[in-house]
Amino acid sequence: MDIEAKFWVRVLLLNDVETCTLSTPCPFSVLDGQTGRQIQTPGARFDPTGVPVSIRLTDGGITIAGQTFRDSDLIIFPDNPYIFNLNGNDYRGKLRLVIHPNGRSLDAINLIPPEPYLAGVVGAEMPDYWEIEALKAQAVAARTYCFYIKKRFGANRNWDLRQTAAHQVYRGVGAESAQVWQAVNETRGQVLVCRQSDGAEAIFPAYYSSTCGGHTENSESVFGDSFEPLVGVACPYCQSVAKPKYFFWPMTQFDKEDVMAKLLRKYPNLKQLGEITGIRAAGQTDYDGFSRLTRVRLLGSAGKSDFIRAEDLRLTIDPTGRKLRSTICQIMELHDKWAFLSGRGWGHGVGMCQCGAEGMARQGRTAEQILSHYYPGSKIRTIDY
Ligand SMILES: [Zn+2]
Image 1: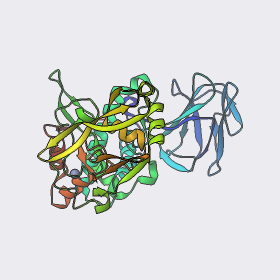
Image 2 (image 1 turned 180 degrees about the vertical axis):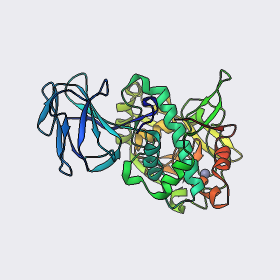
Image 3 (image 1 turned 45 degrees about the horizontal axis):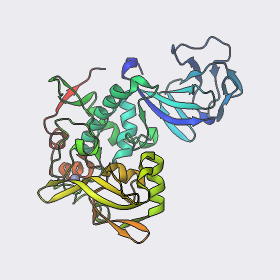
């Protein structure tokens, strides 16, 4: 808890809500969200130990357990052991509540030092009974990714990361275990760096995904950014770890109408195409016979066509990614549906393959070896915080 403020991670827990429920195993203070100092009004200390407290937006302020604060930005700071429960889930650190500029809703943000944050990520992103070297590789990748996103996007908003797979999954205390803490502690402060386009050494977005299907993907084809370690590498390791039904996924179909509606909601410009009459492969990578769709062409009834990244198409059609699991597949028209078949792998495929990391660890490789395989050219550096 005494780590310098600039290293704290800010995780968006609730977005756009009017109310939420808090409970703490000990008393808590209410601080000014801007200065971090305790509010000097009587009643800025609460002792509701174990009793759920309601937090709600009220006209011009935030009401906590019936007491209204005329502030738009507050921090709830629980006493040692610094744990709070928000809407049924336990988290470490502090809880910041910020009213949106329109005054109609608020965001709930978890302020937490990096290591307990990572314990809540590693245990959510990987089974904790996996090899310790795989868990350690996961901790370093997640720490690097977290600091990169924080540096790149955090300055312009009051949070750094979402707690979902849109960034990396964070489940708070519920994801922690002794093995997970061991992986986090044994890699304390470790991040990956690489040479950047200006020649300097810095962190990069150390993406990772579940199961690459046999070869990882270069970042430029998927996310449009380019870093030396984010090239595709062969992965003969994940097939023995992933369940067969996840390594090869079954054909999945989506109603054309539904696909059209989802695409238009996200990309209103596609309206000019009319009805979508064809989805064709327009770009794919080729690694010795292994290929992943990277770009598709949408053909429309108005005689026009447009291009979209295959990964964007996938997550627009199936935001959970549970059915349409990767872009290693073929697309077919089946009457009033689009069908995706011959599917392989799970996730975007860029960076470390999580099942592959476990496969390497089972063969006796260390976290360092796993990381240098999936992020070639990267180096491990330790941040001193
Ligand atoms: Zn793999």
